[in-house]
Length: 201
Image (cartoon, rainbow, N blue to C red; front, side):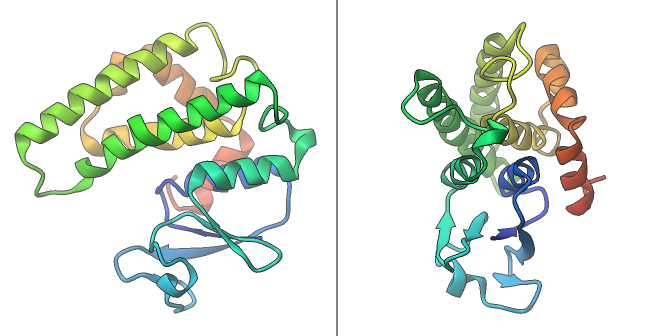
């Protein structure tokens, strides 16, 4: 498999999951501004959406959208327990978290990276994100991970988004539970490996 990624982007989530899975894979960095890969390929010819992540499967097919990619990887390495078994309530809890992170957190952060964002809209986004962070902090209080005591693909995704907070003017010290969670995930060997590989530490 090959993961197309951009350092620090949402593609960090499947990058972490790939390391957690122990499955063989390669990486190809994408410049999201020029839409060129590090080998000079036209990324839009590989992934017409022009966004990361994209995972090239062993068959040559391209799978896109982070939540779909991380579940695919988890199901390829079931012994690692990166996702609950299909059909169980816990698997639907995982869907629940992946959808929440994708729609309520990920997409709320994205506009904040634009310099021309009107201040009134920015403040509205920051307030909404703060409310959602408070919800997440409440849900993980007393737990190591989103689904309890086991690290799952949802934790890789949440960790990735929390990493954007300081870049968009959000101080996570308002949520000590989230700070502790972020530090706990950061200490995982897979995460350390990814942060180094993406030049983020």
